[in-house]
Length: 399
Image 1: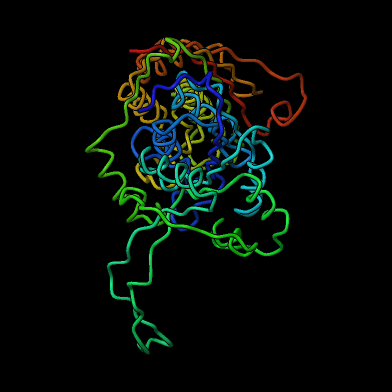
Image 2: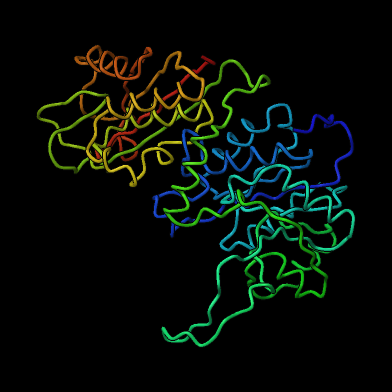
């Protein structure tokens, strides 16, 4: 890892594109925010980015994930966090890269564009691309030789063989002179498969450098399994000396009445009350606590770790969610100090069972949880008795 002072002039920016939906991955969350272990795909990608030569880092994320992306980036950056910018992406990949380009600092000369889905790309592969752009002035793409025999196919019939000696598999980051990339984006009127194709269409030369076998793109469930196996053999360091010893997170959750069965809220059952609807039991209090705790530690949110790809949490209660959240924090080197939750609802009446709720939540999380409740004076959906809102604040500390 480079130890160059970030006070030295920076000439390179890296745009990390993390705004994709991840439909083919099928994990119910934007791809970059799916977990590999207790960390997201984006967080693992940023390890390689910050292992490379110091550069401005611009993360392009879905608008609703900008805060999570910033937490991931700050955790990965350590003492380089002043180099980080996070911006909301657009409807297409090119629109997202353009959003990142708009935030590149004025004195940057070389821009690399990197897919967050190539989460295990090592820092030396990133440096190789930047060095080649600076040396040649050309666009640069990291590639790997194609090792499979490639056939031409039409309607399930093989019609010929492609000479694989002329083929290479393109990876990211792809690097360009800043002025060349900006001009190419300004003239682009169609969507291209990657930035090198866009720049080549504008008439510029593109060179190749050696890629990395680790820089494969996580696109399918099989790719995700492969990445998880590699990560388990080389876990991501979870503690950086420059990170603060304590951190605060805020979580909120809302559920409407109308579910089946009994009401579960704040970890306890409420006989005679209408149930909340939701993928699990609709416990807005427990879910707000999960988001607050994970957010404080920079470990994503409830969707990252408890999405629809975790069927064991369908119908689960607070004890399951909070115990697993505590385990995620412990593996990442954090512990929960305490959590405070406010419930906003007309029903149920909390005062008679506040003690039971606090005990249930505290036992499940392994840390003190306090609960307060209020109404909203008849205002909004909570005031009309249509549902429940919970707001949680969590304090976590280095274990």
